[in-house]
Image (cartoon, rainbow, N blue to C red; front, side, top):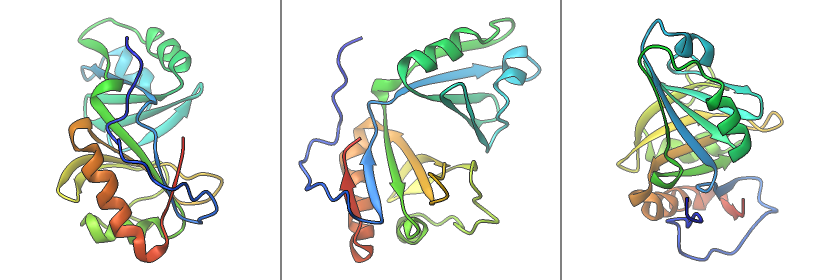
Length: 184
């Protein structure tokens, strides 16, 4: 596979000292696994629809009733997906180059998301490890809450064709909260 080139092409001043940050993690390896209900693969993934879990250096995300995304370093993702039982209706596809992936981290992250997405960001509705699909700034996205050292954090994944627009829309929504940009 060719070297990854992000769809976020603008240059931003890095502001690592900000308590609220947005990072472009689109180069993260992403595999999609589809497995029929009742297959050993579906049971082995262990992240039911709407949930996520960390396994062997990967994040396994139940994005649809029979569809998962596995995120992480390439070696870990491929080791994990290669070990999945292929019996029954199972497919595994590398879709790193087709999806953008951002991380929004900080205690004000829900306030930023409230401005551009109409779901309820309260802990009771969107606890750590929860997964939802929603429109973010009118872009269809999968959103995974994945807190970092006790600080709220969300992965936001969309089609790569919308990446630059979505990144800028999140930055605009976070301006009043002093949202900073960090490098992956």
